Image (cartoon, rainbow, N blue to C red; front, side):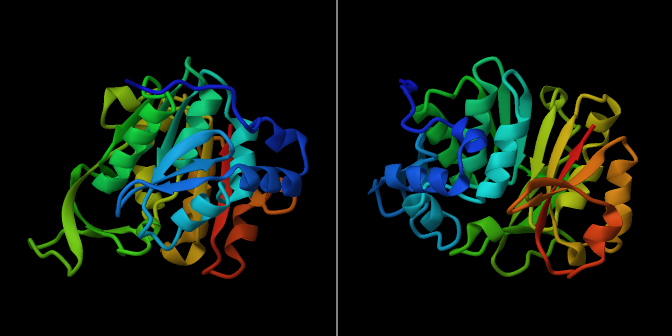
Length: 283
């Protein structure tokens, strides 16, 4: 039987109304974590949502288990932009931190599509959704996304699953440490056609994922794109950003201190090519 959502210990709307330090301290004070098994831990994130995480993960899970939040600047922007009733997609969902946040914000009239090719991570999202009474609005797809429907090689560092990445599957050769999985275009299924809010964090696969979403862009339902971006990962990073903006999107940077700051493709690509930033496109 699915769980029921009770009164939250922390009001998510405070992320827009209150000081960040106050919010982080409040969320941290509400964070709890218990071991469920050798491969599962249960923690509370954002003072609201119960989540299953991987205790052997040295990257994301320690922050969720001890602090109860992750990337607060991006968290605040999601709260700012996502509205009840919207259809949102979390690509590269990992254990589902942003998935749970999105589902809470869209409410029962909305939908959240979580894409996570790691089957163990995808199963954690399914369990967390049930535990929080949100299985009716969260759909989990254990597939990779790309610009073609094809088999690819999936590589996941054992202690840093958030840094998993995709390689081509060529000549039936599988690199050491990789497994062969299916990849699909984001515009290849009718049940994905209504996405209005799209977040992509896919360790360098973002450009191919965007190419595979051309059908969504043409239907003009997609209004907001949040994108992890590191210029050095792409052959022509400026052209990549300009191609996105050619669809009528404005560009902003998520600044850690100032939130959404309007910017340009030239400004983003003229700095350190190894700098990770989060970008927001709106139309």
